[in-house]
Length: 236
Image (cartoon, helix red, strand yellow):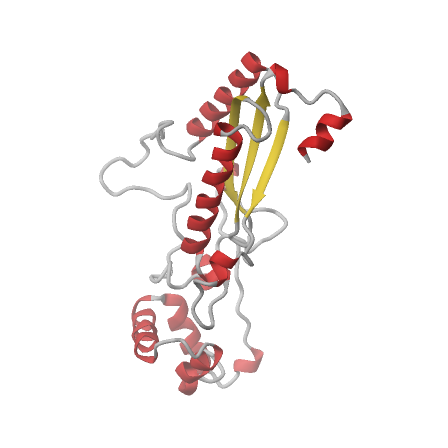
């Protein structure tokens, strides 16, 4: 749309989704055109007479730190985010990476992110150590339970606006999966529908399509251990 039919750009977008607001789309277009260098480049490309012979090359941004290096199987994954998510990177920036430097005089100073920062290496390591301590005290887990968000759930479908898909409403997905997960925890941990629980750990993650799911490890009381095939069949 930026290249082949710039005169009818807004009309083309509205054809893709009739629920879009024309005035809002026009404002976004002008903001991106004024501040996003990628948009400016594409517009300039549209004016070239040899446009059919032009190529747009996306190169990997190299980094010295292997922790933040891009996957070798995809040379463009990660650093073409400004093109994939122009509203999140409206200025065409690449976001944070290990080559970022501050401008307040702390250039070169090492900064250690504490374990209180959720998702940091120290936080993940501390959680791992806590989980290992639980297993050391109570024994190996008896149940591994997975709960996956289903975009076809009635609670999700009923809240979607015309033209929307579940992937458009991450806020809705996370709220509903959290509410259902809290009920599941109450059934398992409090009500003991699978037996008396003496210890448990869980993690919630997001898959590539953005759908959240939860994984639970449950350790049962010695009187409720699953010792025979019949015990497993009863749980299932």
